[in-house]
Length: 317
Figure 1 (cartoon, helix red, strand yellow):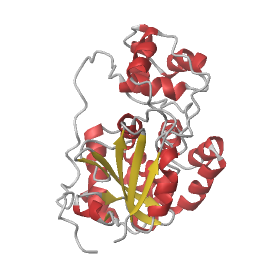
Figure 2 (cartoon, one colour; figure 1 turned 90 degrees about the vertical axis):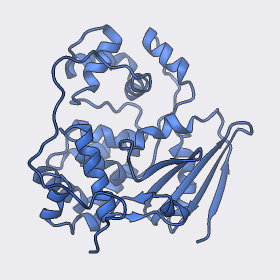
Figure 3 (cartoon, helix red, strand yellow; figure 1 turned 45 degrees about the vertical axis):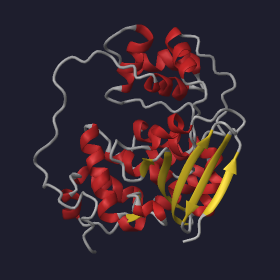
Figure 4 (tube, one colour; figure 1 turned 135 degrees about the vertical axis):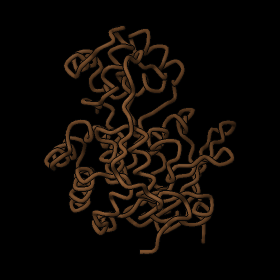
């Protein structure tokens, strides 16, 4: 398969890893791999699947992208936006000592913009109101069972591409259960898959329109919309309200208070509008989280085990 290459010279010391890390869904994400210093992504573009390899050359101030597959031209055209070239940092002032230190440690991080709504939406739906381990396991099972290997050498390295919306709509209820995805989550995924075209078009029209279209769907609220907008559209003001940890962690990082709710979070972040997501992500990159009290949430045991959720167990359809 023919490879296509683009060498891009950003106007700042581009931090590829910190910028793109938000796209990884757990350490075992099959669509996101790091191999011999290169970052690999499996991406379903409007033109078809693609494998993308990104290599930094800081000594030359360059980033090299190599792509394979029908979607290769699309991903290479999108590479600068994916690495934060369209992120407008003007007007952002850290001010708070915690943010000043986080910004000092990550001065070249930028908000990614993939341009792909469904790529961000599917795993976000799986992550609604469940533990991270449960959500990541469900996502891996979904990709291995109904996705496809990335084109070219990416597939040989174990890089996969998410299933297309049309494939999601064909998954029967028993397969969702085998993947550890309960009926409530699978119904939401089927709903968004049926409206994938309208949602992608909403993304082209901007964050406000995408937010409106997303939140008009049953089971899609403020948290899911924000999780999609800051990944797909580079919305630097999207905040993950209603998250089990985010509000408490940000409140603790900025005030030292252990318990924080959405009202408290909104008030704290208001001075940083339109950079509220930037505050959220800098605190996450700094690894700041409140002291934990009480037992952790446990994984459910009532769903069937999935023996198809591993590489090499891609059951024929």
